[in-house]
Image 1 (cartoon, rainbow, N blue to C red):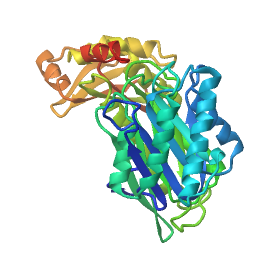
Image 2: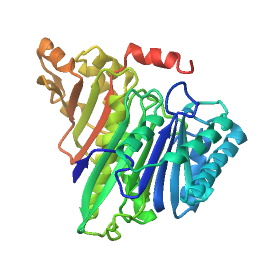
Image 3: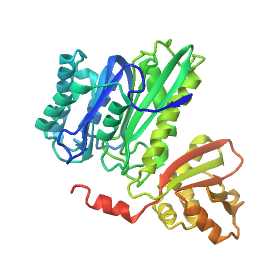
Length: 411
């Protein structure tokens, strides 16, 4: 696998654009990703019972459509909790995009246009603004890195930086590319966070195989991050595969499947970790690895519980080696382990330090621990036994800035 520069347009045959159409003040707020040919596709969505209209639209397409051609995304307005009007507006967005693309010789239908929205909940979309924006955005679709960056900018809300990644892997004698972009900063919690993630590939993959692969990858990437414990109404991951690399069809029995799967997971994990690094008001990136659990699911449950704890997050904000909060969070995770066998340690670029061995607290140098925890990126390792289960989760600290950002979000 080779890491490339770029994002959503890295794969052959994908075009993109991002513009400011007026949903937000002085910022890009409408993005469009289009394939020059039909794509198999897959999707994963929020577990929140309250689902935004675009989520319901996309879920319907995943159930009923074999191929799609485009994804239209707006930021600044979530089109969530907007009733039947929200559903009509989502359909209108897909129809308007299909019509505008057809006029530009990229013919498609409304049922081949996925739609995503992110932003304030409970406010109807200003469709007159969006309609003008759709007419504008289709005029300048390009396959360049700059076009990918524009699209990545346009999907952001409280994000402080764009999130892009691209890789290349060989399938036979053909180079296959996978590119992606994501947004997310707050309302981030396991079981899909308030995030949008879009992946394109020029590999040839069946819809069934792609959906199964996405399901596996979500478990080990987006479902292992937490910023603040909130799960949104709009969380969506979409993957499009247009087969334009010329590589042969790959599936679970293909010799190259493991290489493709590794690259695919790398893209999702890189985007998930970027979301955590951009956590609202975050000053630290926290990686928690649990080993020795009875199985992978148990290890992941323990790690997720630690990164999701507000008390743990607050301790990291203060660079306080308060390991008791970590053990406590593991205890209510729902995963079985013996507290009397646990080893805990912290590490960063400033070194590492053990704080618990065999379930027994040990004397440690508080100044050294403080220097380790003052670093921007901190790792926690918890060994809970001798089992085969390993899991890693990613989170951040909880700061005063988080409250400020979310206290005046609408204004």
